[in-house]
Structures are given as structure tokens and as C-alpha cells.
Image (cartoon, rainbow, N blue to C red; front, side, top):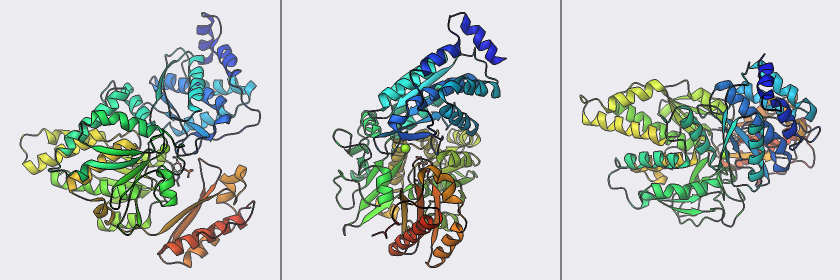
Length: 555
Ligand SMILES: CC(=O)N[C@H]1[C@@H](OP(=O)(O)O)O[C@H](CO)[C@@H](O)[C@@H]1O
Ligand SMILES: [Mg+2]
């Protein structure tokens, strides 16, 4: 029925919508036989394989927009992956990741052979009963990869082929696009749907919040930032002007020379457990790294003995949830706060949160979409992946209670102060998705308000030594998803290996963003964590049909 309506409508203008799609899809042909999955965070692979995917995601975004009667976002980025890669993430009306059912449609459209594309489109239209006469609008953003330019053009072609209105915002961080989509669909209640609207909202909240930190020292106002040679560096430079000298940073890896994510950025620092190249850091100085699309952040410093200390997503979640819990107590608000983590969370962080802080902790599958959904179940849900991707969600009811309290004339100063802090904190947080710039400003404000140095923050608990390995040699990449998780005896072998070490834990899973199997291990010492990670890699190699030489011991 809806399909027929689409044909009738378009006939008035000459070509039917589907004829137009067929025509344009010929300009973005799919290499026969290529199969890609919508992974942990969208499609991601070498940029050369993505032109048809982008066109088709433009089509899908147009359909999703017609289906929801709202603006949809398409972000062209491969985040922390190498510069040669690219990818695409779809953003739903409230700024969240696209819903699971539509991930399936994305995979369906992506893998339809050229001649089957219209049928695949029709299937989505019929299953969702989409009114093809409905107007549609799509916001498009891209990161700084050289391939992003032509790939975002391919998205626009897909959007226009279905008669939708495409607005290309050019260079944006991923969280900026999420923010703008949400602003647009809430008629400005969340902020102004523009890049400046983003800087303005966050900068104002930061300035308000740090007014509560009396006598901020110069040290508290200054931070070293590794921009991963990506879009985050450009955005931070723009943010600088809005911060009115309330915060200064020294920016390294700003993209003027180095290669994106190469030997720098949040993922490199977290996985390698070492500082990025290109950052001049003195002992004790607070530093942070963004990833390639600025939705992740990790902190670190070198101590006077030259030892490196990493403050990852778990440490960030602990800092923020402790701060919020204290404010709730001061404000006399009985709101339930919880932290959502994944299996990659350091065991010490989970123990500290549950046993010492008495904060509820939930563990969910890897991927921000899983954390985001779980966090929505609480009044206040703090979610962070260990790699530094995360944010805080406040339920509507919680926000309203905080706002009412902040304007209540009959409360004492302590309560009023706490309620105002909570209100400004809400304004500083990008609740649509993890956001390196927003998280950075929040962390800086919290450290200043609580008078904590980075060393004191780090000492809240001690990480168990851990090791994460990703090995291309250990498994047949085309079959990674199934063969890593289900060869007979693998879990038993891992269990037996874990028992050999103290305070130990290990697991393997196929990555949803790269052709690798990830092995994670933690134990009471770095030597044990490394040895366990190696032994588990060998078990994967032997039991999951490894190709190439056996994994070598870690240094
Ligand atoms: C261990 C790890 O850090 N995995 C990352 C990585 O997913 P994988 O499915 O592990 O490749 O990229 C995802 C997207 O950025 C992120 O959400 C996730 O946490
Ligand atoms: Mg990212």
C-alpha cells in the first residue's frame, strides 16, 4: 500500500522514487559478493569498500526519518580505527544510536546485490509500513579522514534519491552530531541545533559549575590534550573561544602534521598502557587523549619516577558517580544512582563501587548501545566503557526533581548549593552519547570542585594489572564471530588457565569493529596478566583454528 503510494506520488514529477534510487545506485555500485555487518558501532572497514554502503545508509536514514517523522543523523567516521578505514553510524531522533531492528535493515540493505536493492528497500518499507509521502530530513557529519569527503557525498546522494532533505554539516565530532539531532527533534529544548549551540551550552554550564570551585589554582585550570590528530582537536580549538579563559589547554596531535590515531589517541593509550607520541608531558601533569571522532577520553600522568598512570573509563565513572552521590546526599534527594560497565571494567573498579561506595553496578555486553539502554533504567545512570566512552543519563523525573529543588525558596544553603551544582552538571553533560569534550569539562569541573589532584583521583583505588590483546593471526577473520566463541573446550581451557593465577579473570570475544579476536586478562601482577593473556591467546589459536604462527609471549 505504502509502496504504491510512493510510486503514484513520484509519477507526478517524472521518475518514480524507485527509478531514481536505481539510477543513483548505479553510481555507487556494490562490489559483488562483498558482505558487511552492522557491527558494535555501525559499519567499519577499509574506506575503499564503503561507497555503496554510504549511499545505502543515506537511503536507510531517509526511510528512518519518514518512519519516525523526525530528523535522523548519519555520521561518517571510523572512530579510533586507522586513517585508511572509514565507517558510518546512524543516529536516532533523541540522539541515541539507531534501534536494533534498524541495524538489521542496515545489514539487509548493505548486502543486497545491485539488482536486489529495490526489493530490499520495499521489504523495509512494508515491514515498517512507511508512508513514502512523508517528508524526511537527515543531518550528516564527518570526521577528518581524507575519504570522509566523498563518502559523505555518497550519503547525501542516498538521502536525495528518496526525496529527503539532507543537511551536510561537514566536519563534526560524533557527539556533536548526536547533540544536534536531539536539539532539532526537541525543538531547541536541549539546546540550539548548531555547532555553536553546542559550544555555547557546554561552555556556559562549565563556567557556572566552576564558580562553585573557590580559588581554582592555575594548575586546575590547565590541561594537556592529545587530539589524536582528529576532529576533536579542531572542535576543542573552537570551544576555547567560548570558555572565556576559564580553562586553558595545551593541544598536541592537532592534525597539522601527524596521522590520525597513529601512535596517539585514547585507544592507543588505553590498549598500549603508555603515553601517546607527540605530547610533551612533565612529571605530575594532567593529560588526556581523545579518540578519532572525540567520543572517548582517557586521562593519565607520569609520576616523578617516570612511571605511567592511566585513568580510564572506570576511573572516570568512579569519580563522577562519587561526586553525584555526594551531591544527592547533600541535596537530600533519594534518587537511585547506578554505574553500568562491561566485562572490560577493571575488577578493582567494580569492587570499589559496590563494596566501598555502595553504588549498584550493572555489567552488559560491549558496545555503547547496550550501556546506554541499561543506564536508562535508573534515575541516574553513569555508564562508561573501560576505554573511556561514556556519559551520564538523568531520567526526566530526576531532572524535574533537581530543577524544582534548585528553585525552592524554602531550603537551606547546603541543599540549594547541591541542587544548583546538580543542575549545572546536567547542562554540562551530553546525554545523547559519550563525548570526550563534555566529559573532559565535567571531569575538570569535578576535580576543581572537590579539590582533587589527578594523583588523588588515581589513588581512589588501584587497578589490577591487565592486558588486552587483539591478534589477527589467531583466527580465520571471515569466521571470527562464531569460531572465537564456540569451539568446544575453549571456555573450559580458559577457566583452567585463570585458576593458575591470583585475582585473575580472562575472556575472549570477537571484535565488532575489526577482524580480530580480543583477549582480555587481569591478575595480581603485570607479569601474571601478560602470561595469562598469552596463554589464553594460545588456547584460542589452538582451539579456534588459528592461522599463521602461534602467538608469541608478551614482553
Ligand atoms: C574492548 C573495546 O574497547 N572494544 C570497543 C570496540 O568494539 P569491539 O567490538 O571490541 O571492536 O569499539 C567499539 C566502538 O567504538 C567500542 O564500543 C568497544 O568498547
Ligand atoms: Mg570513537
